Length: 250
Image 1: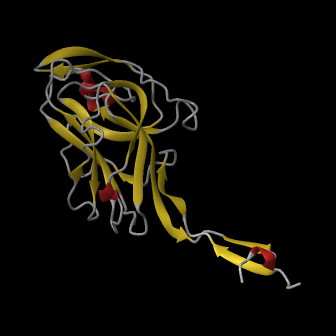
Image 2 (image 1 turned 135 degrees about the vertical axis):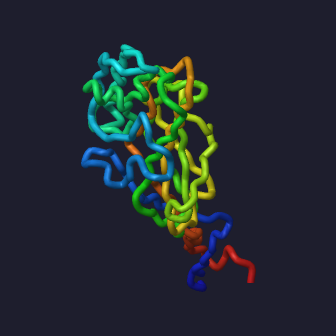
């Protein structure tokens, strides 16, 4: 009897795709938020400012509006979801009104939320260094945020592909961040984030005069940039099996 034949069959009907995900930046603002430059010269700074602290308690104060003393009240800033952060009252990056600060109120507020005693202004906070995404197919940015605001008072997310020389508004899933009085998670990924040597992100607070302004102002925490690279397909495994020579036609 002839010895059994060893048949090797290459199963080429499918491929195996592998993905690798890397963290390019994770800023929780617990050690000062060195990844961001607060109140950068990209936009004006006036009655409000970006600040990093762990203040969540509001209060009442007084400012001079058109020559008259005006009393204002800043509500407490909602605590963060404990399951998503290091705790419900950790550091975060947020807008703070100068009027609130002068009254010892250091939580998230803007122009003491009266919206009437100042001119329009725009406050910018931007990443202080680049991330390189040339090795990745997809880049995602995510963060916690809140902002009550008004139709003309809201937050915005920007990105730059030239180290911050110019900035582009991110308009998906929406261009404006407002009408959100509790912490929410936003996740954004667009093709322009990938394949860049000098990618940065920035946040802008738009504060235009309004009769319906309300706190809290714009606040950010748990800022995370991740990138995914799709590994080239691997060949399917080789299947080996034996049959007797009687099973094969001569």
